[in-house]
Image 1: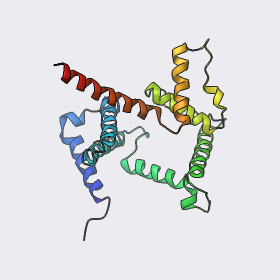
Image 2: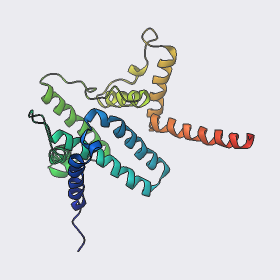
Image 3: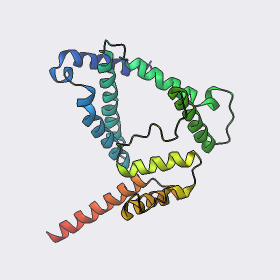
Image 4: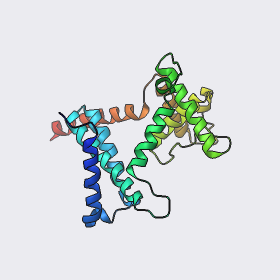
Length: 220
């Protein structure tokens, strides 16, 4: 009989516990010191998806999972009542998924994927309002430190979901440069045709890389 799904996760938790106590490098890591690795593993996962390499994707997902376990293990060591464990992390996301899928775990009926997305945003806004104790912005929680192109797209998506008029993306020239305004408007244009501007620019960048390398080889 094959092992139950998820049993290997328990083994990984045990491995992480052992590394944290017995490995000098792992023992000295902090949330802050691990930030570069979390970013690196995330981008490597994205690259595996773009390549369509499932074997590579399997490995990269493992690296991302390790980062999640590592951060949770570090947090579990706190003694100031702010700590949490990997079980807390898993429990929180399970509760969130149940709460935001009332059409699956409750008695809500939806007409399709678009309504599911609208309900998700509505529930998320209600959660933000309840947690903040005051009027919530639809843009609360958008990480401003992310790459500018994906930041612009996420801000526009959130605003559109909240019912903002499209012309809000037409930025005034006295507040941003002409180039900045054009780039922001271009993001809106890409989104309007159902594409992701970050992924489209990455695709164009890869095409340019291939063209350059072909030119490079032909010129040598």
